[in-house]
Image (cartoon, rainbow, N blue to C red; front, side, top):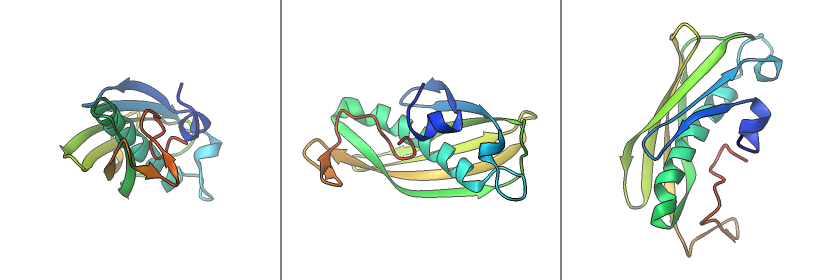
Length: 144
């Protein structure tokens, strides 16, 4: 089970490779905003986390780590407590210095509820983030 945000949100990673990452979660009260629907931050966090995990799995064997630069998430359909959400992310492009991943979140009826694209920076071994070297640590953005 992942630590940090994913664990706090009850997200289960169902598949994680350098080419695709999938997850699911059951919507509970902790996921809702004031109108009783899933908070947009949940969709953003889920999409960024999956993209970050996949990007990191691609980068780590190359002696790199990744950090998020941009997250563009669109909210398509409102979801209420009790629903099961499934998300799937795949790479759009993977270069030497950046990666772009896209993801889709669907409900239990396979209706799209959110889509997103995340751009990530690939850091070399000698580079640091916030004063610390990050190679070898799998703490991508959105994952604590």
